[in-house]
Image 1: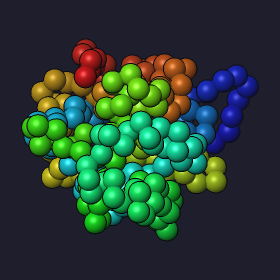
Image 2: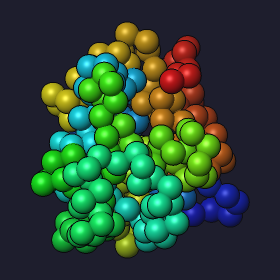
Image 3: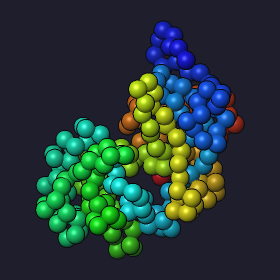
Length: 224
């Protein structure tokens, strides 16, 4: 791949040269970001009534964090403490605010290897994020870790590229996949806010252009 003059050129590549993506035929390249075609072609709308926020406790480690997000946690920690469970607060106050994992890098700590220490259950048994709740309550300006906001999109970095793939968990995310198909909402539209937060409006506009040009058009945009 090469980069022409001008911002965010877009090319479509065959899988043969990008085998890092499983079970896809093409990727869209926007600058150094390679987006799986599944992000455009698959449909998804998170169904919290069914999954109960299970992605906040189902995994091998806490939520991946950027170095900048470590600073954000330090900044808002006192504000979000009232939202935490007793178990989560104990982990953070007696152990760590974040920890380093050999595979995932910096991550949020967990409660005995299960729920994220920054999670809590609402009256319906749905796991909510303390960072996000504080944001919605107008107490902070930082919503939550971008890795959480983008899920079930996952990003893998190499020295040259960032690879953006759609990776729903087969059982946990099945309700979200079913709801997405019912509502006919592509993954990239459902995660519009998160993608813009991560890469910017211009990136999203180009991705949307690619969806329209290279793939079958969709008729409904998620407002969820």
